[in-house]
Image 1: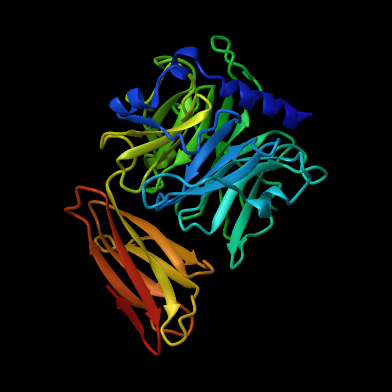
Image 2 (image 1 turned 45 degrees about the vertical axis):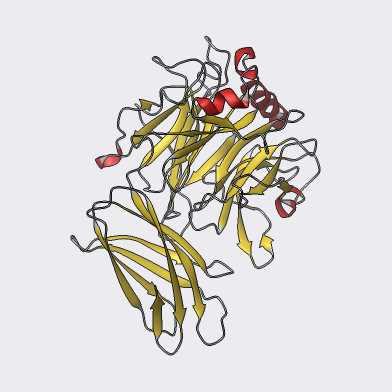
Length: 394
């Protein structure tokens, strides 16, 4: 059975090098890296962590229930992670032994993408999405036959504007790296058409794909891609690299993240909103390490808040239009239908932006953000309320 084959693949990826297992947490902290002990378990395999945009929620894959399922943990006031709990709405959707993993949250936190093998519903491991509602995550839905095939599709990563999805398929021509014995994959991307449906996927070109890649993670700017790869010049098995989307859909030469990589498998990269800490998976556990400004996307401003009816206090759906004031170009239009009215987006340094909030039946209102002099990541709160007129409270 194909999902059983993937189970073996994931277990092999998480076999810890003997030397790394002997390192103590204290020694790791001295070097700027910390094993997240409150989540990383000795008795189970924890895998593929992903962070929410605000860095306060972590979702990951684990065999704590016997088979592969999704778990969630939240960052507490003392900067430690809470005891993980099962995401039952997704884990209980199919059968007990169904395979579920490789999750990724949308920038606004409204959608959870992941791969699953659901008995009698999937041809193989397919990509699904769950939408957040008033009572939590909804039932999984397949993203469609244009992407999901008889092959393995997994470990999706959604762009900040929800228009491009990155994922991996097994490299049929070179399924195993001869030098390391690791399974090899190819990174693909798919975009939405005018109707919102996903188009036929295309493999990312060289120099991203060289034959043995996995764990793609598109960052908040929609251009910076972190991923794992086995290639010439690496430090061991799967190492973390960074590449940037250029003009004409080309990618820059991947840069090896030397301050993070080890001789083992370094996978599932995530960078916090501050841009100073990298989370990733290694040695059957999760790690965080301090990084330089050269790692991750350009400096940015994170804008978080909520949209509500000023008279009733009820959350409202809204449209958020982001425009480059210098060129007049519309950078993105975000549809915010979070059940609590929450929104989150990032603006890259070096540009003047005009951000317009719109909600049906109310007057729109715009706010200007001048980020031409921004040198460090920052976060601001914007509470937007709609009454007879729209008011923006700073």
